[in-house]
Length: 400
Image 1 (cartoon, rainbow, N blue to C red):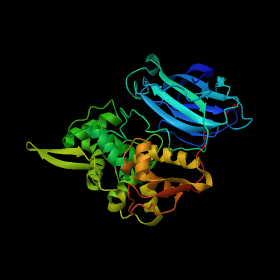
Image 2: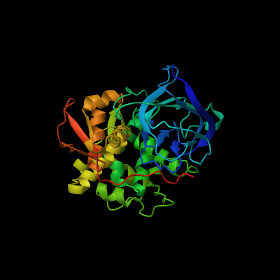
Image 3: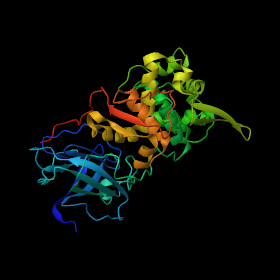
Image 4: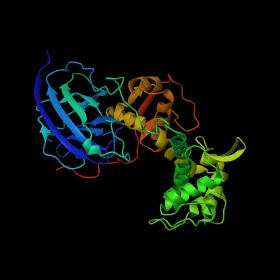
């Protein structure tokens, strides 16, 4: 029977969704949709931006008994870094709570969680008044070579994530705004915030006057909107000076000066669409706008960059899991198929294909075959993936 060797428990609050278990002096270089691993660390992601976490970490002498009373689960490769010290558990702020890894060496890490989706950042609730998220980390030795494809299928709860599940016409339109490249094209300009404001104000379907009045109230809560709302000037953004120039340029307008100009610009580029219902002319947030690279004539490196950024919104989670698996395989590379990856991470083949194109386009992964945006990729086609030439995205601070 497997025996528990050591365990530690801690409770803390965190920010930016950060939950980390890493050996002292180890700095992770991965992001996680749920949990990812590398030599000496486990990078975990809380369910909301600010969370209260209750975490227990255990070391076993063999694979621990299975349990089904957890909502989410994954089983990952793990390997200690010699002389790096204990596995320190922490959130955004440092912690002295650590698990003695002893002579674990090469092994596995079972990660279990429940309660990650009780609270959503921005909801009218106090996250620290809610029951804490519960996490359990079980580390145990494993013989043989590292196999990042074993341990699946991963079990995840995606509840409430608008990037994966469209909960309303507004969420669907915001998702389309990002995955079709328009969000990236507007970048950090004032036009980006104006477009998001309009989509939020439209909600499902509104008349032009209703939309203008809602936008005025969104941007200036002390105003009431009304018949003159379309003529209301666009208020300056407190941190951005371009006054909507990016939106004007993309929509072919001389300037964006009024709320009416914003609406006209968004209709012209297809983020808002018109429809007549019961004799009323309505504006509806578009969940499936034409991609910016088709509408705006983007070519070359700009086209590739726009596509990569658009894929990031849709396939970032699976891309991080694939990249983590590739890192474990060294020079030999990860030999697999899109179908095997979809089964391992419990997702769709389309999601895997999008993640592969994102990794290839961003330089984070190299492959033995073409993974370009317009290439064909079969579900059972054999792939070998290696680490690419792009620099690591590192954890933003050193551990104590």
